[in-house]
Image 1 (spheres, rainbow, N blue to C red):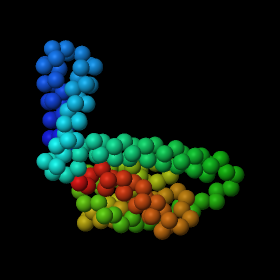
Image 2 (tube, one colour):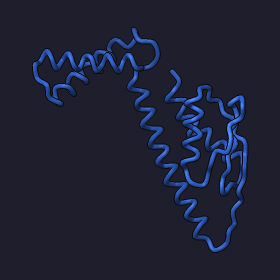
Image 3 (cartoon, helix red, strand yellow):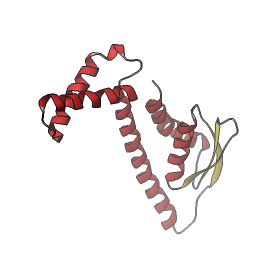
Length: 159
């Protein structure tokens, strides 16, 4: 991915020097030409095109902001209720993530959403222990995290 991105920037710079115009619009045109050339020669590159990982990263950011908004509303409803009908719970989330940065990213995304916090990561880095402020069903909470954040992180990191 990094090689493709650097190659695209290099092609854009070469385009700027060939057209002897050093403006942002010339760079953007060169970048688009470079992207088109990389797409045309994609079978010579190992793995996916970098543009798909950028798209997956954008989708992960949108997913985080959606979950952030929904959990803020949920915590606000808990705070504004006259009765405290909450079921706080600590549960174990088994994860399929392999790299340290993936586990750190998942832990950070879970902790940054209000109402949940990662308390600990097991020594083998296969289980996260999470405290949630209001959980009706543990299996639903685990499935929700695995089908949203973990799936999006895998999409970003896997070739």
